[in-house]
Length: 144
Image (cartoon, rainbow, N blue to C red; front, side):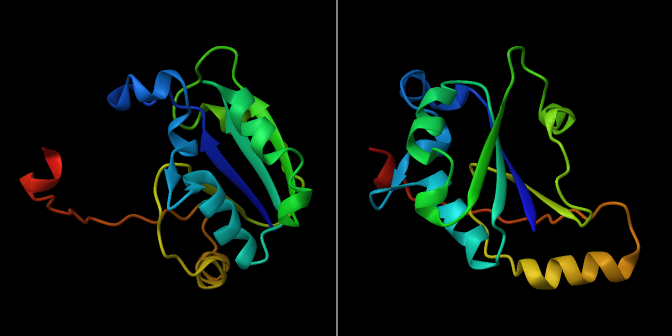
């Protein structure tokens, strides 16, 4: 199974932090957010991942390399000129004949990818999108 992780954004709302580290590499409990996503995808037997990069891509490439240390194959695309949210998909070569999971690199979601792929195949649709309307209230005590 193949997945594409969109990780090329500049993280402008988190500047100045994102001037030195890509948003997807921010640690959560000592593990980069992107690593959590890669490990989660791998737990669903998704073993071929392309990471679409741009801003500070060298940090992502250095950390993940070819993916062997995670038991998967990781390849990269790098935008020289920003292509927009879905633009990097033009740079991806489909290595499989099956569906491709496209995931953003800054959102954690508990998705059963086996169920999602099964539902997608049964529908006969050319694409399936997972969305969730959820808000989390953060008390002001955390913002001081």
